[in-house]
Image 1 (tube, rainbow, N blue to C red):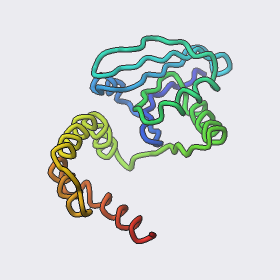
Image 2: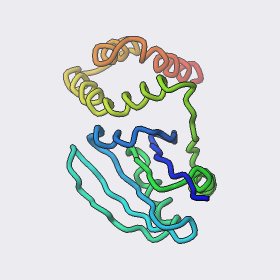
Image 3: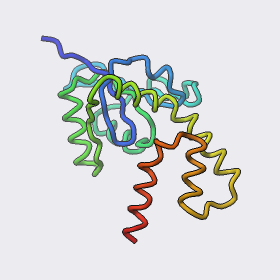
Length: 175
């Protein structure tokens, strides 16, 4: 029986599988990781896209240890991963978390709508961050959390930053 190959997205310590194999075309910045060959003798290639232009194409990585180092060094990037079956990916992430002292978690969405919302969030992330940086540049100093929240709410919408406000308040209360 042939292994079913999946398509995975890794972003900010969250790994999920998707059927939306075209999502990488909509991302302005991302890293593609593609495994060919077998699980025992993989051939791993990396490509990178910045500002919708390929800046690295088909760079070969020797083994899983080199791949772990690459992922650890680029953990802030969105990574599109192909060629791994679920079992191999689960084992790889487990080994990665142990050896690199990280906490990548595999997530499952409760339904397709939630997954589509998250994928849309990834696609629009760069544009939202540009708006936030423009707002930050136009403001001299942010004195209170309320000022910060107003600035974020003007770049995004109010509901998305209520949880951020709670986290900031919790951190402030701990001090």
